[in-house]
Image 1 (cartoon, rainbow, N blue to C red):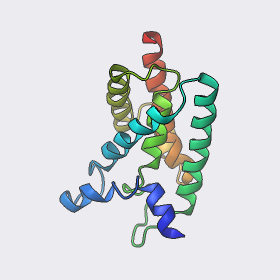
Image 2: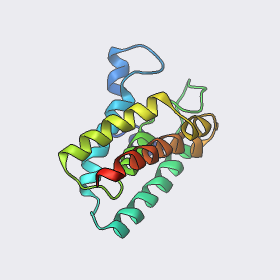
Image 3: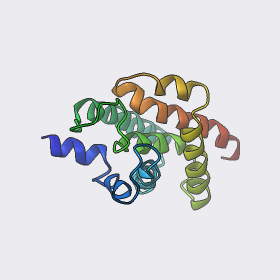
Length: 154
């Protein structure tokens, strides 16, 4: 069962790719690749606002649940860089209620990655929580910042 949790947590193991090239523990590029996984998922979610909201909330629950279940041997921190389901959840949040055009997909991507990296305000608060909820909701809150930044353009 652990292989299923790892597959979900790591974006079907995409987060293992950069660690083969870059040997740092943080800033390996896995978050970037995880966010890229968010693009096709956003395009699969119905654009109807109610269905998008339901899908997004269910994904948040799935992400927290997966982060609680997944275990990485030899890693002692609470937010393993290989876990990218949180970036996917954050990007889905950033795109909430926005048109699914390439312009919005790209702007949301850049802003989300910026807020996720800089961790302003509430993003840092969630990042300090050492549990599955904190792992996911630092990215969700970065996505919410992104959403509020983009909303006037919609």
